[in-house]
Image 1 (cartoon, rainbow, N blue to C red):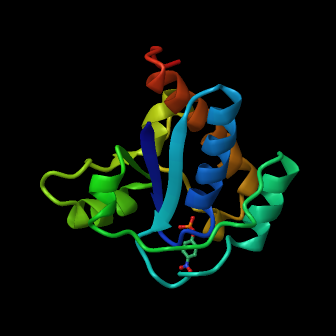
Image 2 (tube, helix red, strand yellow):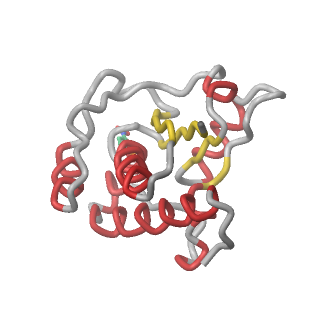
Image 3 (cartoon, rainbow, N blue to C red):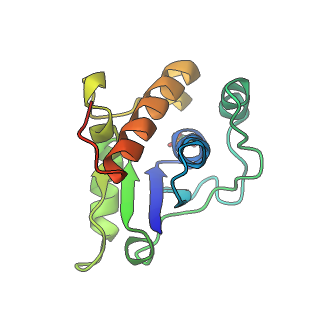
Length: 153
Ligand code: 4NP
């Protein structure tokens, strides 16, 4: 089974949203995945996702309420096959923790080439929770297609 880890800064907005979206869409597509998320920073460890992120996701049918923040560790790069980060700042921080034999971190939005973006803007700052969900849904569907061996859209 493929194990996917999403990484953002706080693990209370983007990566827990991606975790719930990919888990739901992979299950709907009949794809067996292990999905988790974490943050490069430790400020919110043990906390549930940010309430506006929980509420925006709930309107689209994704339940984030049981998720709890944790911090990225070097062991994550050997436990997970795919380590997907949200922006280039996360990428630098994750690369600094990745052991030589670990799964190299990659930008999640490479699975949404049609978005024309490399970085997923942080709704903690932009307040655009709907736009965040749109990009996460597009990249999740691109990732599911890639895992099934289909060419990118
Ligand atoms: P996230 O957003 O990385 O998408 O979870 C953030 C949430 C909290 C903070 C930064 C980013 N913070 O500095 O507390």
